[in-house]
Every structure is written in C-alpha cells, then in structure tokens.
Image 1 (cartoon, rainbow, N blue to C red):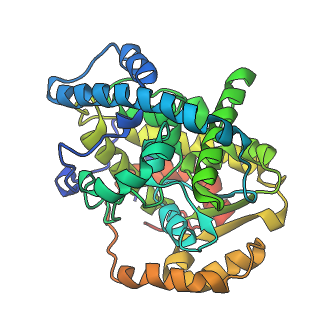
Image 2 (cartoon, rainbow, N blue to C red; image 1 turned 30 degrees about the vertical axis):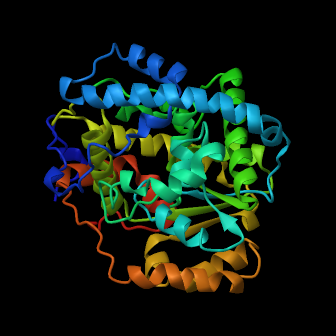
Amino acid sequence: MRSSDSIDSTPPPVPTDRSTFNSYPFWSPRFWAGMRLEHWLPLLARNGFRVHPSRLPWALLTTASAASSSMLYLMQQLVYGRRINATEPVAPPIFILGHWRTGTTFLQEMLSHDPRLTSPSNYQVYSANHFLLTEDLAVKYLNFLLPSKRPMDNVTLKWESPQEDEWARITMGLPSPYLRVAFARQPPPFAEYLNLDGVSPAAIEAWKAGFMKFLRMVTLKTGKRLVFKSPHHTGRLKVLHEMFPDAKFIHVTRDPFTFFPSTLRMYRSFDHTQSLQKPSENDGLEDYVLDSGRRMYDSYHSYRGQVPEDQILDVRYDDLVKNPVSTMRDIYSRLSLGDIEPALGGFEKYLAPRKNYVTNRHQLPDYWQARIRSEWGQYFESFGYNSDDEG
C-alpha cells in the first residue's frame, strides 16, 4: 500500500460502475422541476444555457413546470401566507448531521416513524413553493411519476418518504452546493454554503429566512416536531445552534474508506440522471468530495464544543444498523427526546422489511486511501476510526 509520500501527479479515478445505477424514467421529475420561473431562468443564464441537446427535453419540461410553480406559489401565498407567518415550531427541531452515505437517511426514516415526529417529505422539498395547496392530491395520484428506488442505492422512493431539506432551498431559489448537479461540467457553485463561512451577513439572513419559512410551512402542514437531515448542516452547526439554541443534534459517523467512494457513486448517479449536461468521465469529483468534507468538518469541529453535551451526540453507523433499537434507546435517553415506547412499534414496522437490505460495495485505489488519510486525519482521530484499515 502506498504512503502519502508516494502520491503521484496523475491520480487514478475511483471506479464507479454506472451500469448499476437504478433506472430513472424520462417522465420522472428532475430536482429542478419545482423551481419557480424567476429562479429557474437565472440558473440557466448563469450557466450560459449550456444544455446538452440530449437533455433539452428535460429543460423544456422543467421550464413548463417552473411556470406552473410560479403561479401555484402566488396562489399558496394568497391562501396561506398569513398562516405561514404566524406558525411557530411545535418544539425545537432535531438535526441529523453527518457526511453523505453515513446512514443519515436510515436514521431520518427511523425517527420519522415516531408518531410525534416528522421530516420534510419528498413532495414537500420538491414542491416547497406550493405543497400546502397540492400535496394531498399529488401523494394520492402521482406516485407513478417517481422511480421505485433512488438512482444510487436500494432505498425506495415515494412522495411521502422523508427527504433531505437541502433540496427545498433549491426549489425556493436559495443558494446551495447541490446546484453543481444541474450543470455538471461547470465549476461547482456556492461552496461557501457548505458551512456559511464567508457568506455576507445579508445573505445569511436571507438563508435563515428561507429556512424558517420552510420550517413554518411543514409545521403548518403536519403539526409535529421536525427532524431535518442534510449533510450540509454538519458544517452549519454554529448557525443552526444560534438559530435554535435548544435544538438537538445527532451526528452519524462511518469509516471514511466506505463513505468516500459511496459519495462519489451518489454524485455520479445524480449527474447521470439529473444534470442538464452530459457529465465527463474525468469529472474531478474525488477532489470535490475531499474538499467539501474538509470544509464541513473544520467548521463542525471548531464549534462542536460550544453545544451542550445533552444536545449533541455522535452515533456510529455500525451501531445504528446492527443494533438499531438499542441505539435509538440510547439516543432518546441521552438527548432527552421523551419516552421511546410510543415509537417502538413504528421502528419495528420500518425495520421488518429491511432485514435483508443489501448495501453497495466499492473499490478504493491506494492513492485515494492515502489522500483520505492525509486530508481527513482529524475525522479518523476524532471518531475512533483506524486510518490503516481499508473500508
């Protein structure tokens, strides 16, 4: 195995077998489908309208959908605007933190089966501009539009399934690093929004206002305590704690040699199924993922000690998947989330069909193992992973 001293100047790519991506039908909505026209057209313009001819039908369909979303947004504001502004959280939110592909989705779906808790749904994040008007009908009649599974893994998709709230920021026209997927061949935008460092005070206030509006809308719809999950929030711990001083934070960790190639597969599946450009085989995503992880965890480590110990908890992925109920008992106890008994039935119902769930396996060249050891050394040390072990 190479040491970090022997890193050469032409690194080998981490292989991703694109033939194993789950199918994403033509008629299924892309991530951008819920944007309003006033945000969709500037996104196209910022990227010089560089839409690949093979993706032009997607762009045209999204333009039509965006025009519809703009009208529905105005209707929702007219009908629900005052009620949205008057709605307050039922309780301080719960935030699930952690790098991509560390089990954060699994934890979010578990918590969403507690009848007292809820997470933003797929439909709510993709239709953040109008879901108060349209969600009930869409969930009842439009599930056929979704693929049965996510492109990169075996997690099932339904409109009512819990989803990462970062996608709502895109729908609402707010900056997000995920916008790199729209134009996969362009320089990645909004890296500063991984941790909000260097973002102007006015822009941070706009980000906070958008977050609060979405929180109020989901609370108005559900009347429950909210569980938010986004890997990006890992680097935003300081801002989120300032916004919600009594919030609870659950941070999931996993062996970096496992989640690094899995994150690459995730992004490449997004680029394959969602991008308006044909992604390059030489996409440079390895460096992008390394840089994003370093940026997020520099911020996380620098602030974590300022969050009271009864409000933040690190959970290992292996414990969560091998002993999910006992791990959940520990989470509820240490973070004072209330009596776990009302949630146990929902947990068991969720877990029963997933006992034979198969995770993807990945290859990781020695070069990238060395880079990961070198650049993410603090992660290995802080969370008790052995950097000499292969994922």
